[in-house]
Image 1 (cartoon, chains in turn red, orange):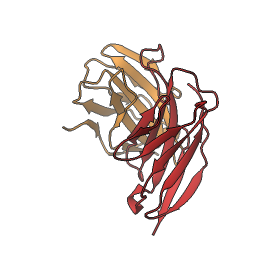
Image 2 (cartoon, chains in turn green, yellow):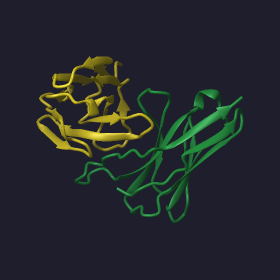
Image 3 (cartoon, rainbow over the protein chains, first blue to last red):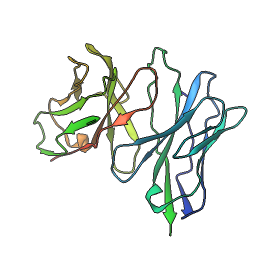
Length: 114
Length: 112
């Protein structure tokens, strides 16, 4: 699976958009970008994923660049409860011999301030 | 739906003792896995399974055994605990066709 690079920490004001970047310059054509977050010692929680197109759900938006070498997770109106570690993961498509293992890096610590 | 259930939530062991961390899921997921998380670090994959009777090693398998006799259960065994195995352990499951992992609440293990 392709390696990802994320900033170790970011701050955001409550009510503002939080934009979390992720670099995955060695991504292959069949690899998906996944985002998870982990709120203080809890199990990680799935947020969103995408292959090529931008994606949006009730939690966040995912913007993937045209060359797919980087992406940005957007939390449109951050709240204090969004303070967490955010993990960007690149995963092989389903059906591969690796069964699409997910490798978690150290992620970005997002702190949302009042 | 209970989702992924891990027991125990907390455990203290002495060096050399053995124990089993239990993991059960009720979502009929084929894929189950165990991760460990050390302070200030991301999660590292220990072992995983893609179905009953099939298991494979992850990044850090040494010191741990697993088996998968049913779809629902995926226990993690420590045969001879060492202080280096002090960590928080997470079990997770998903279907084979997606990357959406469902995690348990974690089991905090301390080895003295």
